Image 1 (cartoon, helix red, strand yellow):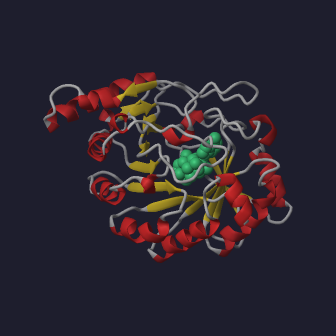
Image 2 (cartoon, protein in one colour):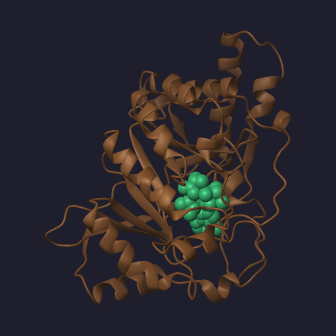
Length: 336
Ligand code: SAM
Ligand code: SF4
């Protein structure tokens, strides 16, 4: 694959990282992500595992070097371990990661590691069992903590915890989460809530806590030193002197990270989303399903669609907490 034939958008940014949502379904109902009653997509609209594998093969053929499987909850998708195995074998792929709620890692950490999964991000918003239940509505803290331990035993390294912090709901968990991350040698990222999908339980403008506020809070107990960040993403990383872990702050509101964006997303329905905060997209499912189904013909169609889609990638996102969400998709269908 020559550099020139990679996926380069209209602003000269090279796309090398793709997040693929493998299901919109989930066993949790986190308050910032889903409503209590969810209608999920009909199965016929969801990409099959084979279709996801074909997309992954063509993305890698076009220069993508890192894929993250996400959802919904990737571990509720039957066949996820074999999907990991088939994607990991693609020549040219440097890293295959997964973002999970951790609820099923107790059983799946070892098979996933054996299938070649490189790294895990595990969501953890609270260390208090009742609070955890309130925030996830259906999740059990003990199960996730056991899952985190199972990941360590299975040999996963550089596992990262993700915590969404909401004012008045779990902002008092910031220091306990930092302590837990330090004690267990885990990286930790704090995510600002994003206005994706209409939720009912809280007003996002009221629960919003900026990354700057979180850093100030942490600095009350620990010193934080900024580290160089080369992820091309929305995270800014810090270290606590004397410790190995990184503490990240993902700030879609307060930090415009679009300039060096190297990523796109594939939704559960096979829409290639060029930007999380915009609706610019290409229907790759139609490209996969229509026309000659011989694999060479499908590969040719998909690759040409991927190149064409680069012209659609917008320069930046427009999130605004004061207004109704302009992006009505839920994070779960988008691939967070
Ligand atoms: N189910 C998996 C999990 O929870 O890790 C993967 C999918 S989830 C959509 C991916 C990440 O998005 C999680 O860390 C979750 O906390 C985050 N997330 C979901 N809705 C969000 C929102 N409205 N704003 C910010 N982060 C959100
Ligand atoms: Fe499920 Fe993840 Fe959304 Fe929580 S954040 S409801 S675990 S998809």
